[in-house]
Amino acid sequence: MNTLQITPETKKISPKEVFRSTEVMVIGDLHGNIDALWGNLESLGVIDDEQNWIGGGEKLVFLGDILADRSSDGFEILHSIESLQLQGANITVLVGNHDDFAISFLLNKPVSGNGGTFLNYKEQAFGMIEFEKYMNKEYKNLEKLNREEVLKNMKASEEGQKTLQNICNMKIIEQIDDTIFTHTDITKAMAEMILAFGVDRINSVYQRGVRKVLLEEGSIEDLSEEFFQINDIFLRTGNREYMSNIHGKSLKEIGINHVLHGHSDNGGKRFNIGGVFVASVDHSAFKGGEKIDARSIGVIRTDGNIDLPVTDKDMVGNVMTAIGKAWDRIKESL
Image (tube, rainbow, N blue to C red):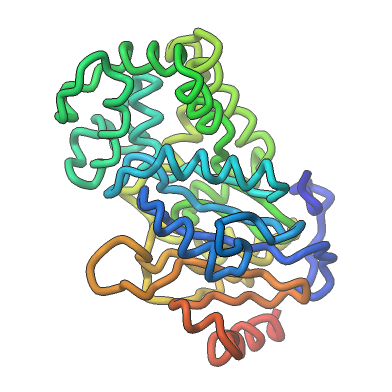
């Protein structure tokens, strides 16, 4: 349950006035790479050498892009996260636009916002090859994936059922204390839906729709217009222009001080939008290329300060340096 609910009665509150029962950690895009899971968790210090949870009651949010991305460890990542949850980890997993490639395939609907299917994204959706294990024949060809065959075989398999359940538990958005977590950059339309519907309703509509098709024998025709609206607003990648200062001020009036998101590697830039601190946690960690030491992690401390290290070594010593001082100046002006 959120400790600070979005309601018309909620009032503006300073970050330092918010009661935080524990630190909140966040991990950005995993790109379907199991090494990204363990590397980021290790940098946060919440797992031991045997990959067991040692993070106690601290909360952790994954910002998505686990399935249908450039690597093909998505199923293993979901099952590993579930194992950590069974050990007591308080973890929330969000849906990313790559996860939507897979979920749209399973729901038999176009990719959210942009239309088409995962096949339109070629190597960017390579992780879809995981679903071939639920085909009656191995083709090693994404174009041969058959939705009816895959879903039938997943439901008939204990492991497949577990994966479907993990998918149904994913959320579109999360709110913890005075912070909103989303996969993509927060846009005007996203802010307006948060203000109009609230976080719990958005997640309820989305999860209920996915569950109806994947676990309850429903069909895409059974889903509400609101379900598709939520998909298109939160998972569309064609327009990720940040919300305006007016939207930021409106969110701040209902108690939101921070928005942390993934999806966009914007070089560590931080933004003050209408008094709301907005930043991306995605630093292309484990995505390939030159950023071999990058990490996509963040920590909201119990005093309201936010650590957003870009590399693993930034977690050592004084991680707040220039970024922390800049954020302190922003908060003092609020």
